[in-house]
Length: 138
Image (cartoon, rainbow, N blue to C red; front, side):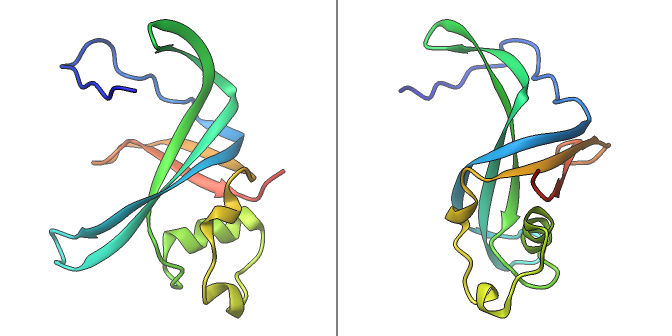
């Protein structure tokens, strides 16, 4: 499949409306190691992606219009340290704290296909303007 970039060719993507949704994790992507321009340190990053079946959109795929569930993603530093956003979100999602054993190595592949509740909030920010809050699954 081709990956084609174009100059701005139409209206921007309409944000998913604010609210709480049941979503399913469909991708865990290793983004590799990134160097922070501010701090000069290196951090490994991961991208989690969720599909929200109840919010649909019309998209073009292979020249045909299709109606598919909307998706949303969040980038994290690959860390389960006490202050890590990934740890906080996974604990909220799972509805419990990590055990000492799990903190020694938690395989993110275990969340693929898992349901959770996502709260989508629109706020002004320099990055995206949309925030995701994750809660425990239904």
